[in-house]
Amino acid sequence: MQGRLSGQVAVITGGASGIGAACARRFAAEGADIVIADLDRSRAADVIDAVDAAGRRAAFVATDTSSEADNLAMAAEAMATFGRIDCLVAAAGIASADYVSGGEPEQGGAAGRPVMSQPLADWERVLAVNLTGVMLTNRAIAACMMQGGNGGAIVNIASSAAAIPLRGGADYCVSKAGVWMLTKVLALELVGHGIRVNAIGPGFIETPMTAVMRSDPAGEAAMKRMTPMRRLGQPEEIASTALFLVSEDSSYLTGQLLFPNGGMFVG
Ligand code: NAP
Image (cartoon, rainbow, N blue to C red; front, top):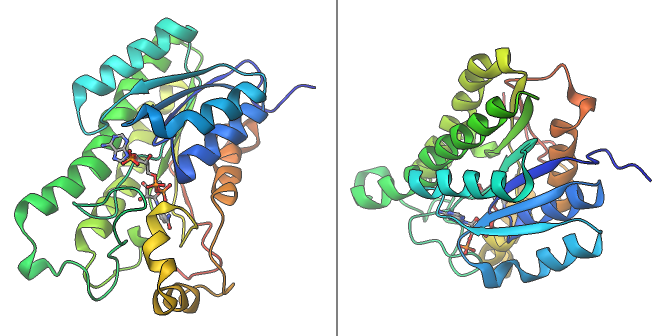
C-alpha cells in the first residue's frame, strides 16, 4: 500500500525521544526513510527498530543541533546515505539550561527562572539549542533541498509558550516565539524554491519533558487546569499534525504555526 510519504526521506532532529520519536515512527509507517539526528545513539534504539519494522531504512547521525558544524555534517551524511531530503522536523529542544530528557523538571511555572536572577549562561544555552539550533538545522537542510531541486517541507516544533507568557520561563518562551518568527521569515525566503516552512506549537504533551511535572499531582493538575480538554496531549497527536504539514494535504500552507494544545487560547 502507498503511504502518504512513499519514497520520501525525512530528517528528524530530537528523533530519539518524545515528539521527534513519534514523528519518526509515523513518517516511517507512511513510507519515509528516516534520518534521526540526536545526541545519544543508545536512546534511539527503539525508534530505529520501529522504522525497521515498518520496512523503511533508518540512519542515526549524532548531532548537537546547536553546532553549525554538526548540522552541516548531518545534512551531508543524510544526502550521502539517501541521496535526497524531502522533509525536516526540527524537534530537538530543551526545557531549561540544565534539562536532560526525563531527568529535570520542565520549569515553565512560577518556580522557574525569573529574568532578574537568571545566569546569563543559562539564558544563552536555551536560546542556543531552541532558537539558533533550529535556524542552523533549517538552513543546512534547506540547502540540500535547494540542491535537489524538488522543493521540500520543513516543520519546526515551537510551543504554545511562543504565544503564552509563562512566569519564570522567559528563556523558553522567547526561544519559541523566535522559532515562530524564524518560520515566517524563512517561509518567505524559501517559497521560490518550493520549500514550505511551518511550525507547531504543542500544549502540554506526555513526553520526558513533562515527566517531572506529571509525577507531582499539583503539577499535573496545573497543566490540566490550563488545558480546556482537561488532558495532556500524546506525542502521536503532534506527529499527526507534523504529517499533515509535510504532506501534500497542506500544499497551500506556509509560514503558519498550528497549535495542537487541547483548546488553549493563544490569541
Ligand atoms: P524530549 O522527549 O526531551 O525530546 C527532546 C529530544 O531532543 C531528546 O532526544 C534530546 O536528546 C534532544 N536534544 C536536546 N538537545 C539537543 C541538541 N542540542 N542536539 C540534538 N538533540 C537534542 O522532549 P519533547 O517533549 O519530545 O520535546 C520535543 C520538542 O517539543 C522540543 O522542542 C520542546 O520544546 C517541544 N515542546 C514540547 C512540549 C511538551 O509538553 N512535551 C510542549 C511544547 C513544545 P537527549 O535526550 O539525549 O538530551
